[in-house]
Image (cartoon, rainbow, N blue to C red; front, side, top):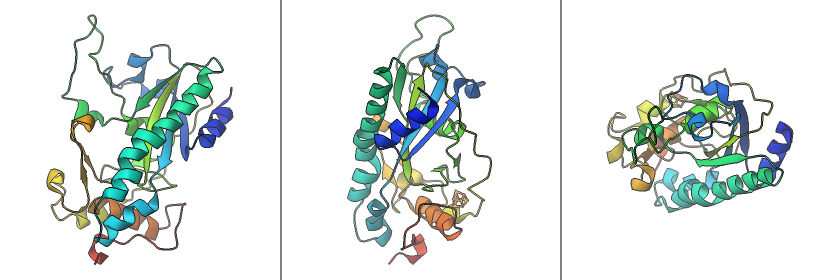
Length: 254
Ligand code: SF4
């Protein structure tokens, strides 16, 4: 099994994005967030992504619809069902060929920092649960970068994707880390925020407030800052997956 086989299989199972990195790229990450704390004999991080359906945002953009479509097809169902199924199928395919792989949901490590659920099993070990920073993993796997608004941005879909992680015991040819900046500091995100980016938990401009299952994080992809970012990326021709109708900034929403 080579990297190209894994990538082809991932796309067959529905992945739109896939990147590979050796776990050595996580050197310096604290053991509480290090994938090697979960699988000490692991060698490779594989990050797979599925795109958020562009149409799931249109209701929020028009200001004339609730977030139901986005929450279903851009967030919860996408992460919990479609992406989970792609992850399951890929890991199953790898295991059927004798390659071990650990599937992981992408939690927000900042939100998990204060939530220690157990004690270390012995001195020197991290406390459960160990959470790997999916944004860092996706960056190290060459898929993109974190923008000024905190959202992960890829050259393919801008802000519109969700990720899962897989740690494998097999070495694969890695992808190069993306070094060119997709976020150019245009400030469209900060200028679109009616709350000066300080009160996301009170956002009335499209953010999704999550519950304990996602550590009460605020998902900002559909918020004014996320939509303004997507519009800015599209206007600058930085998103390769294009549509006939461009995104509209919050100021243009009727
Ligand atoms: S809107 Fe501009 S500054 Fe903000 S994250 Fe996107 S590209 Fe970066």
